[in-house]
Image (cartoon, rainbow, N blue to C red):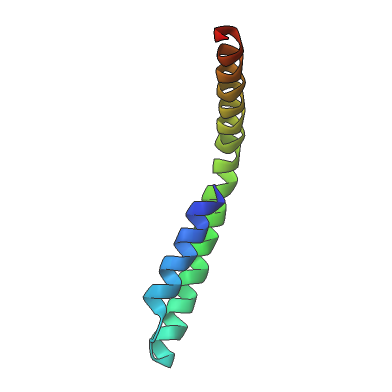
Length: 71
């Protein structure tokens, strides 16, 4: 989940690299608002993260169980 925010930041850093001061200031404001939106989305996504983690854990334990019964 954090990966999307990291990608977001990395992309914006690349995008704003080499800008002049005025553009950099505007971009900084844009980045801040985008990051605010990102964090807002991530707060909502954290619930789904937990669901995903639980499902992944269930899947891996199921696979291990199947692996033990095969032998």
